[in-house]
Amino acid sequence: MRNPLAEQVVEIKPSGIRKFFDIVSEMKDAISLGVGEPDFDTPWHIRDEGIYSLEKGHTKYTSNAGLRTLREEVGNYLYRTQGVRYHADKEVLITVGGSEAIDIGIRALINPGVGEEVLIPQPSYVSYEPCAVLAGAKPVIINLKAENEFRLTAEELLEAVTEKTKLLILPFPNNPTGAIMERKDLEAIAKIAIEKDIIVMSDEIYGELTYKGKHVSIAGLPGMKERTILINGFSKAYAMTGWRMGYACGSANIIEQMTKIHQFAIMCAPTTGQYAGIEALRNGDEDIIEMRTAYNQRRRYLLHAFKEMGLECFEPFGAFYVFPCIKEFGMTSEEFASRFLEEERVAAVPGTAFGESGEGFLRISYAYSLEKLKVAMERLERFITKLRAEQKK
View 1 (cartoon, rainbow, N blue to C red):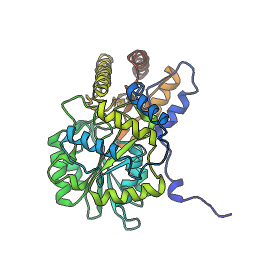
View 2 (cartoon, rainbow, N blue to C red):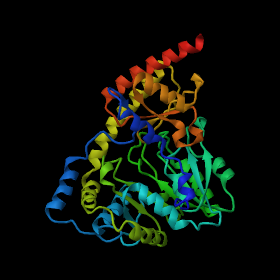
View 3 (cartoon, rainbow, N blue to C red):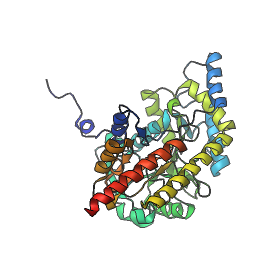
């Protein structure tokens, strides 16, 4: 029998995040700081709307693009928060999480087999590069630097652009670093995107979790709405990870083709989740504020704890991750994370799970209670004190 498997799929490495999560799930008394999932329950009024939709018998397919009311609320929300108008009928698509939007957005743009390039700043979310490969694109990695607070600079972007560049992934606020891009940063990127005729996929799933000013979308800058696919969802802002609800907004011609792929692969996003999503967008602003306030308290606690133990870490202003540097210990990120898990029963994710430029760093999620974080930091301080003592021998 000939090999039935596609080589490009076989060559893709499994997620480095799940590896440590799977290990810690079998360990007694272990603390996991590895998974980017809010520890809050979905707010009750949102859950209640989902339950009510079932009681009302709303259990059939919706239109492929999603409930029109939900698409309208997405448009209302983005106009209210970003000043960008999207037409519900032509420029909004409801997807199965932001992850599906990333996948079908890349597939809708890329002509496979002709060497079109997708620029991917790293460290970043694990799905971008595999999705580019599966779409038949050539991923081009832009290695972000700690000295730039892991922002994408205009100089780094220009250096990576070629005649084959088709798409730039813009993953901010960033997973795993917590880095953000401010308006002045985005204006420099937008100028290049327009000059070089590059489409931007702006993954703003953590946009509501910004702790320095207000999140700015590149889609709201002059000349950028028509060349930006804005991706967001409900998982992080409203603690709705399991509902699998996301959305993509963009120019009508791009959304039309994304909807076509979505139509044949998925049909429509979960109906119950769509009704819950309407309630979230209409009445969930206070929930976001409450959760963001709690995350910010945890963020500040961790940065203080790192300072106290002498562990280098730039201050992140987005998402719910910190990205401390562990280069002083002379081991790889994988080795550090493995020993930390084995010796102190705390799981964090090696920076290399998010690209080679993550080497020497560790991703710690603060989407966990302050009590758990305090125990984990006590264990981390004990661990690095031991490592420093070993170095002196």
